[in-house]
Length: 154
Image (cartoon, rainbow, N blue to C red):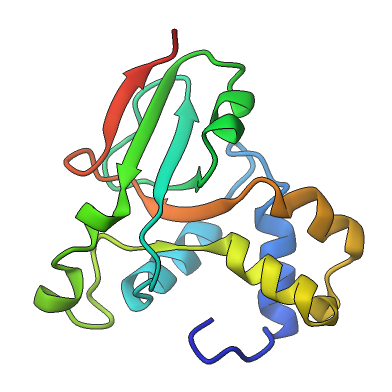
């Protein structure tokens, strides 16, 4: 992401397995990889991110968020809780007080990988995969209760 190079086939395979796999089917290996990515990646954008869930998430859990409120509502049919994170606040001091390999409060814009792939001959993703999942606007982030606001859907 940071050097604008196309991704490897292993990375593409990982993404193709991560996105359509439900939370009950995701294994420790998925989270171990995201843990490494999140500790080493400092995003350049600062979007507001949303997550819809049936109950409050466990602090420190790695989870999918979306940059679109409508997607969050659709994922849980407007039931349960809505988590909102202002990443501008979240990352305000991350680069100043932590160094690469030790980041604690970052996120990874998975949607940006898909958009870059679509704009550069697909990088081996199928056209259908890209069109199906770009709209979800997915980001990967570690849930940190101190930096996430929780609301009930009305």
